[in-house]
Length: 168
Length: 228
Image (cartoon, rainbow over the protein chains, first blue to last red):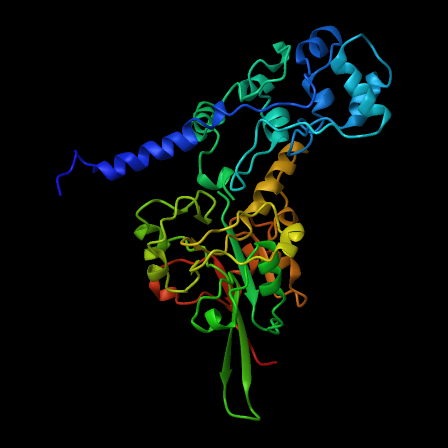
């Protein structure tokens, strides 16, 4: 059979499908139940990322905020926003807000937030982008999570790139 | 440099199988069923080989628990065409399932039959979902798997030690089999660290390794069974 260079056509087609499946996964739109405004919480309320994503400094998972975190400020209306009214309603009814995760890792990857945030002193924005400037919820990963990106950072900081460092 | 290793005292091992079961639960090892197991397709990462010497009633029974020996000169890594199995800097022989192409060269190369092949999609009942260990990757049909010395526990232990700003202690990282042994027959630690019990035990006059003459330099040592 005639080959197109080192790879045959089938191989090239296969590679294109793989790239299509994995290379473009960050363009998938994710919606949130409430149009949360990160910017107003950071610039006006003076909150840090870890005030709501409480696990980021001390746990493996950063975690999405529970209604108890919202309750601290939103047991009553602070302004006149319709979106805030939804939060106050959820707080009154003691219902969790079903936030949708934007960053998920495959199960064969071990990633610890505390190791990167507390021990490694890496700013959240290095992996998550400038979320603090967003006035609407992000509908995609601002900084796409790719193994290449992790490995480059490990290289620059002289951290082991041995497969077992991240893969379990 | 750290070199993780294990010492198993054959005088103490009763062959109870606690290590085998602990390993199954810890590492989400599926049950392949009786028929497949008889074909040698059981996926247990820890096996107990029982040897009998003599004739009844003077029989001497020795139970030999056999995990992956995490060889320092592993034959399996040399034949892997895709670098799915490799020796890392801490002496652990890693197996990355998403890289494995299922050629089984490593299985043929391993003189200890420590590697297992997934002939089928793992049959894990839905009712097990809640008790599945989320720290261990589920393997899929067509890949090779093996004992990892519970490496996921090392990742967690290192993470916690670093967070608490201290050195990793011997008790921080113990594989499930060692932890579960009711006879205290298994000891685990850093072979290069004189503070770890294994570093002393491997110099015992009873210490030996299986098929040492092959030059694989295994990091699982046994303490010979002696009649008392």
